Image (tube, rainbow, N blue to C red):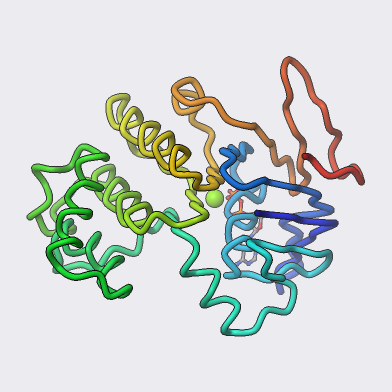
Length: 234
Ligand SMILES: Nc1ncnc2c1ncn2[C@@H]1O[C@H](COP(=O)(O)OP(=O)(O)O)[C@@H](O)[C@H]1O
Ligand SMILES: [Mg+2]
């Protein structure tokens, strides 16, 4: 599903966010990307969504090369992908239900089916009773869960989540873990940037660590891969 070979990202101002990233993620996997603030987690997710381009190396997601992608490739990738970033990008003035339903409406799903699926997605994140509330009246953590519901309701092939439990209490972390687990049952590949040990305790996954833009893989009890090595993780 995801294959990176020697990927680097240097921003225009000279910031090196990622270096020599070698990574293979197979369909259906759950991969956690851990790392301190500034380690490059968000940048990695943005590369996987085609929001930023690598400045070196090769990167393929769902068979689409993201080194010099055409606009139609990016559109194709976006249709396959559900993403939750830290700014959520919910539409103010609309309810939680309307925000989630928009994700299916653009795919032409009829309203009765859309409503049922969107309510089910909101139920999965524990927000049934907030479905009719305007998103700007919801707490930060509730908005975060609406954004997750919106990302999964379409049953994408790839789910990218950037710190999806950052503002959540223990009960809500449980909802997020359940959503990620159920997405796995549907064969959805999941890449989750987080430093929330509560999430890792609730749901096991493969753990990668970014350190100053270099990727390490944690396997079993120790470090299996060294930073900036030339061997791809399987
Ligand atoms: N748009 C940008 N322009 C320049 N530098 C950036 C940009 N976005 C992120 N960076 C830099 O890239 C590095 C990695 O950032 P980021 O991917 O946001 O890390 P994380 O999500 O792990 O906190 C940081 O040094 C950050 O300052
Ligand atoms: Mg980040």
